Image (cartoon, one colour):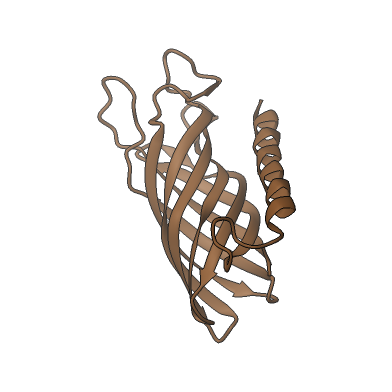
Length: 202
């Protein structure tokens, strides 16, 4: 089931990109002067409030950036991340297949190579597995006991290998209690580290 969901999300992103490239020819979506970026990498996630260890996952993103000058830029777009945590008590995982909407992030480039960035995400838990659920502990759409929406902020840095390719490392800090279990007062907040490679079409 996990593999099928991974492949489904990847297919959706690839379909979006194919349509984009065909009809927009590399210019920014809703922004003629923007650049278009595809980003792929891995995540290392955990959930505060649960006795758990880190869980590795996949990350894919598609973004537009508007560059004010050689130093400042803003970025917006969306992505997919396989998040969650490995629960020590049950020797299993909380799995959250999450769509990430990035309304805006600010990017600052130093000496044309090094960059830092700060922004936020709206998370949508489309599918997942919650072993704590009494109704359904297996993989399901809109997992029981997990809030559908959540918010996080992120900060990170990167290095431009070339004008088109850059390597990025960022950390997302969860702001929302995603615990929607009945009669539970525990606060679950998901946090994750992402290491990714991005290609920008210029």
